[in-house]
Length: 240
Image: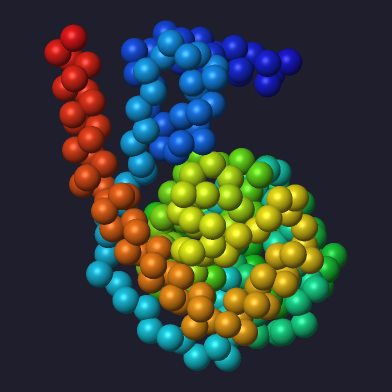
């Protein structure tokens, strides 16, 4: 019932709006199907582009990061289970975020006996996220559903290689694997573990993809550019 009510509110909001703004082609297509009469404008999420350049780090320690709401559709449990099947003890995982799955994920870490390599960090202030990204070797997003995750853009901004599903706008960012590594649907722990092992063993390839991804977002996802597009859209509405 709760979901049905939320869908009714969503559909009413769409139909009563002059313009709906969405960050991905996937969501734009969805809104067009929901209400074909509504004007839909795609504006990418934007970030402040840094001048950070990643050096090839010695792989005596391989740091994986997840920065996400801890909810079921993010499939964070699959990444933890993948860690349980990875033999390489130099590979570790940090999970930033909070949400209803926290306790369940905490129990899973204990059950799999991976406490030494998997850490639930909890909530971290936005200004501190960059410090984690600077020392991260791989960013993972295994979600079933996404719009366009700001967390992935932040990771790309620091030239962190990406392992992600193609949900929502992630497909545009990955570009068939040219700018990252793809978790195919349906996701499972074995596939994720194999991808992590491959990236660890072929880190030069991963870094090349990360550099290509950074180059791609510099214009298309630059905050200043996207803010200007928003400004022009609002001015157009006000002139009607």
